[in-house]
Image 1 (cartoon, one colour):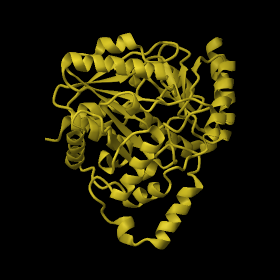
Image 2 (cartoon, helix red, strand yellow; image 1 turned 135 degrees about the horizontal axis):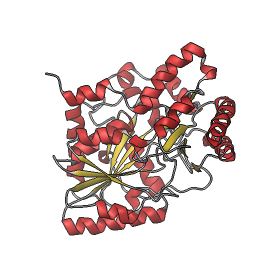
Image 3 (tube, one colour; image 1 turned 180 degrees about the vertical axis):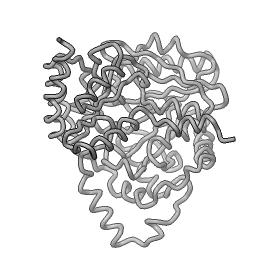
Image 4 (spheres, one colour; image 1 turned 90 degrees about the vertical axis):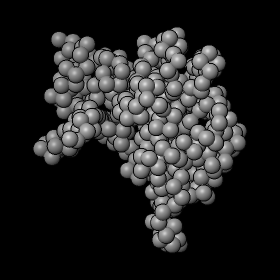
Length: 395
């Protein structure tokens, strides 16, 4: 017999992927320009020019073993040194290459970190709204998902609710800021309050509680918004990072895990991460793109493109009567559906060729997510459809 749990995961995609696949079919039927697909967080901004230059330079001047052969299981040492040095310089820390484990993107980083820290029955707190695949990653590590509900208007963390969810079985907390799906950046005061609670509970239960920072959107912030680096606030922190968004490289699957050297038994924690990577088969992240990120450690995409998209969409949707959470980062707009049932709203939007993601699976009912990491023309061309949909509800 096959594994029924794995069959269930494979036979039904996540809601995001279901909508994305529908979009491809519908685009073939009526033309992609007539389908307003806001389902997938797939960056539309070109990678920085440094990326293309680095790829060309590597292909011209490096041997094939460096680019296409195996690295050490945890990643090339020189790459890990550049990354640890960069973190130290930016955040005044003291990481070494042996605090870094190269991964196939943030999904692998999270899966490895959970596998390394969890025993059967351990609990992981996630802050709603949260990326739907957290549930898959946690349960695959034999953990239990515990959802903390947010403050309703700001979608900042409700500290009282968070504290009420912690118990002796709590092993980890995942925090994602800037947040997918809301675009909210958790304030420094919020982060300090979370860490104070965790320190208190660690002492009460006499075991580490790991703070797992999921950070693929760290660089995608607007104006002077600050994203606190959690290692500076809490010792038992594991950072899961991906270059998918900061460098517009989602399909290349390159990222890393960083273990805080101040964590309890940090060396053992790192070795457990190496073991979890081995057990899951996540060893030797793509070799060429390890070298690419080494050469492009300070490269970034132009976030002003996303800011312009945000402003066009937010300003117009609020004018049409939609209630939206204004994002300070990432490239998602969190919009209150115009009826209680987000799935029914999704179907009505779909009838106008607008594809948004109902967010019940994200832990918050009655909202939809709009991924505005698309061409500006798609946003502009979708506005009449959004307006017509709002008018239908008003009538």
